[in-house]
View 1 (cartoon, rainbow, N blue to C red):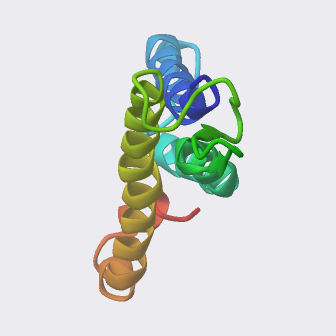
View 2: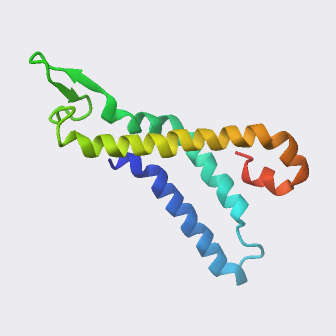
View 3: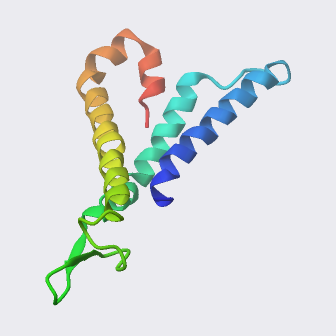
Length: 130
């Protein structure tokens, strides 16, 4: 549950940092740009990718009991398929769909269009430099 919230927390932290630099625009010579924030956020997401993927898939990792029932490997007191398992499964599948697949798709998109877009727009390379 809480470990899956790490990417959301990182997104909020980078959003707050961006907002603070916008407020402090008069003090700073040059405010932090959206492209820099995006690049920094994606670099953190890339560093955490495998860990977050493993956490998102924890609700799918069950082990068998001698009586034929199955429990979650990470929470043995939760029986797979019972009512208590459903919230874990929902969050895990949502995390897998949004973060695991979404971030991978973003990286693939950036790699596929980079040869043409990087020549057309220098801003593209600022966003996807990670």
